Amino acid sequence: MSLIMCDVTSDTSCIHAQWTDPLRNLAPVRLHPVSEPEVNSILGPDQIRACADQDPDERNRERTWALTRLELWQPGAPDDTAVILEALLRQLPKQGQEILLAEMAYLKATGDWEDYPNAQLRKLRNHLVDTLLQPVLVAGKTPPPEFATQRWGTEADESAQSGLRAASLRRDGYRCCLTGDHDDCSTAEDKRLSGSTCGVKVTRTRCAHILPVALGKTHTDTGPEVGNKAAIWRTLHRYFPGLKGLGSAATLIRPENALTLSVELHAAFESFTMALQPMPTRNKYFVHWFPNYWWKGTQILPIVTLQAHDSSVPLPEPEYFEAHFRIARILHASKLIGGLSEAAGGSN
Image (cartoon, rainbow, N blue to C red; front, side, top):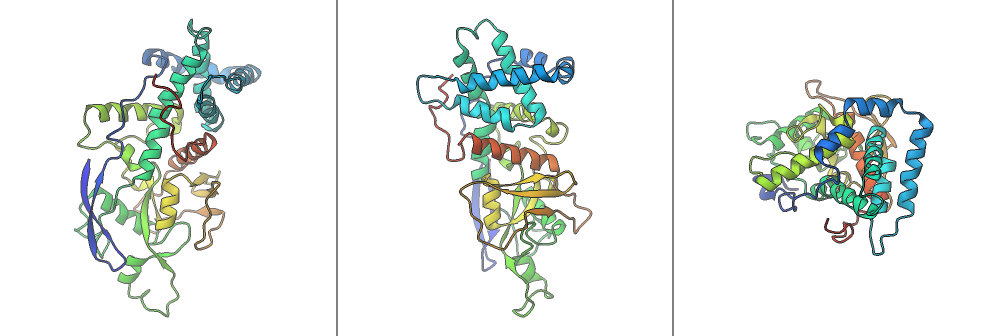
């Protein structure tokens, strides 16, 4: 997918930038070691209900068995299978953890497990890397540029991305949601805020996507891309059940999946070095900083409450933040934030 868009520079002139879908060159995803019909049987309503009704001690024994199996991993070569699967078992949402445990138990019960446990777990690792961890890492590193003019929300904002930017700015009060600093171009347009004596702190802002927009469906997706993105969303819905009926490949360029951040915070958020963890009170979030990142800008409170300055634009959906936060924890716990090793999980 190639889009010609333009962005606002510091002198409010426009430059053209071309964006190519960063997922278009990914290889076809490697298959789950359990066939789709078998996965569906594991995840059917009766099985999920039985899992929920299972004795807590039995569930704990299964969890202990799985973690112990990973701790005893001896692949005989550099291999991150155990590290990645353990990170998933510990950091996925509770229901996602139960599903992964059920899949591992199913693999254990099959005839191949006793002879080839490493091979089965490695296939599971490879599938989850291909359909979850690698796509979000690649997509987060290459967000699309923004089409913008000197005014927001005008007829010149013809693309969906531009419309999202305009709507998010209105909803967020033309400010960065975390620092409160005003968007520089919007401030320049508002004569009440212009001038050196008004004391308004300004910054360049971006429209940050909570789930990377490249995970979405594009009109130029070819056969492999269509298959890959379908597999990505099956994995997201399987292990993040809160996204079912909410998030899909067609629903990412919407205000529910966006917030206004300063340029620096935008880079940290979309690269998973900063995340917002939902709290029990709706629209209240804990700002979580991951290791090796130091914020030197305007002071940010550890807890923020998102508010709508334009009630016609919906606030971000907490389930998107929950998925982003947990994916960030998985990436850091599995040490993948620095990049994936091509040979780490083999080619199966």
